[in-house]
Length: 244
Image (cartoon, rainbow, N blue to C red; front, top):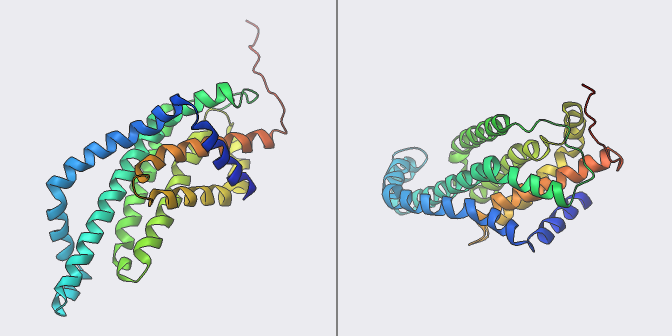
């Protein structure tokens, strides 16, 4: 857990820079405006759709329609929050993370040579696939939310997985070779999940939630580059051009 704490401390330290705040706020503001508009248009329709499907139809049949309605509104708002988080995460992963990565690489991690592939398309595909799997997992586990406590636990676990799945690869793609990524992945899997879970917990804090995707991107960049630095033994690597 020491490596996770270190990444979080460096994330807080980075927030003293004005440019970092620009990166953090941008995806949150875009997602917020988009989903306010969509909520005004579609909240009632989503509630009605939930009320027409199990297990809420069973509650209506048992004569406790008030509970079914309450759960439908809760489910609708949780789904809207999840989609807003997902939108902010896509923006953070595809647009903001590369900017954060280049900024930190030129300031905090100048000793790490970029030996990987700076591929926008690969990062975009990774983010979209993670988002689709997140949506599938959300839909599959939705019936379990009727179990007390599951409406809090399941979204956090899904978001923790999503954060790790989305940001871990993108944070290292430019610096780590394929061999280094294969070596790092098993040894950092648990710590990265815990970092993702920490961000998922912060996502449920009022007014902070939509800032979390960009903060998660920042923390995973710090974690990933430090893990790569330690694996390389602190060696300063350079890239020499081949003679023409």
